[in-house]
Image (cartoon, rainbow, N blue to C red; front, top):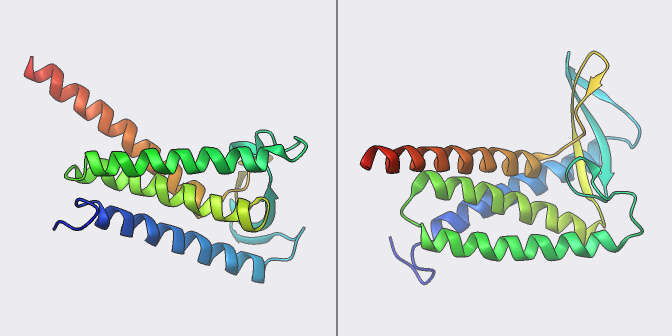
Length: 164
């Protein structure tokens, strides 16, 4: 299936689906979770409401505010690169699903930065006294997509070695 985007349309649609899922879950979290409260779901999973002004693991969260627009620019640049990569590799399904996950996550968090001023996080994983920083669906998409890219790279490397 070819379209005006050179066959990348289905991958962009998939990324858009991840953005919608991310934004819907954040909307529900903002409506249903009171700031400062914890809603236990499982023995090591709770819902909380936090706003992260930094990046992964609150990197630069304590900066004076410039980081918001810096991360907006990084997300825009990364999104452009990913769209180009989707176009270049549009027939590689596994790679493109990974890229679509990362693109959807990046755009989901970009929307938060522009509209809210921080990324809305609401999923908390923990075990005993150990806590993973709160995260969201966009973060999950980015992590799964990055894992897929790593796996794809290993797969490609093995193919090239066996062809030699």
